[in-house]
Image (spheres, rainbow, N blue to C red):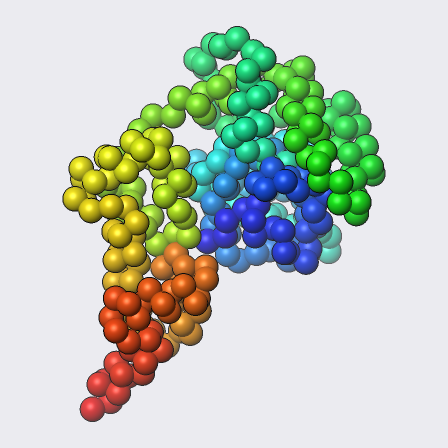
Length: 288
């Protein structure tokens, strides 16, 4: 699983127009589909498809297709995302990621909108005003590292969308995201402990503040979330090292460790042996 926008910052086919932490504007152009299409979107995103199409699948199994010259609001969360690339062409998109601070500042200027009858997925057209804004932004800031303009330009975009045909729905959806319902913490954690997420991410995804998440987690598991995650991830790692010939780096990624050195250190602390030696010893036992 890849965490975005962070994974985009070092991607050779993705151009960073403006970047400030998790808030950014990126330009994506790829000729080949990424087979690893599970994503954790770490900040709300607006994706404009310039060429090709985009398929989004939510954890609930709802699938949306976003075609050329359409925009989708993708709330922070887990998704299966696939670029649909036309034959002998490329997939092209502009993606605007905006963090909680920007979202809260934008919403502070609006009264509470009616939250009933909102679409589950908000898709709207890339109209002339949004096209002019995007083209001008890319022309002005491309290759110039003027990242201090990230927040004001994203706020300008959000206000521009609020004036569009589906502006009320857009504002309503963002307001609705601030009132997420709680998910079953035990079920969610058992299904997602091996994702490269931190405590703040798990708290958000289960519809809780960090303090409430820690309290509810301790109530369910009788252990802190950090200690539980380490034990669950390392237990799965030990199983994979016994059953597979994958590299230590690959195993680390499969259990939620993006940093192999951190994984090796945690594994050694738990089992008093390096993961590589653990794998070698098990193979020897199988041959005896």
